[in-house]
Length: 108
Image (cartoon, rainbow, N blue to C red; front, side, top):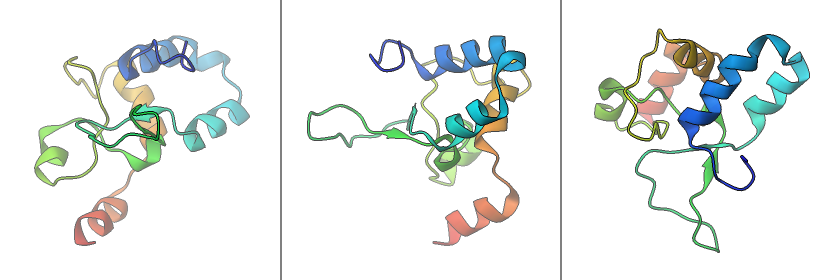
């Protein structure tokens, strides 16, 4: 379903949270480097006009703080972001940003 773009980011992360204990380390590694997620408000598209997918590590949590800093945030499809939910925790494992990453992004 991911390849056919029928899943939203929220649906994908919800699914990953439900199968997290069955995923192998190499599967996690692949998820971290594969462009799978959409950026909120992205107007860009590929040659066919489809939105461009991003690696999880290129995006930030969909919070007002990161929006105010004008950092690229994950498209969460109208769902309320809850960083302490199973889905939120799962996504945070994929995003893996630290304060150094955020500061360097803001200063560039």
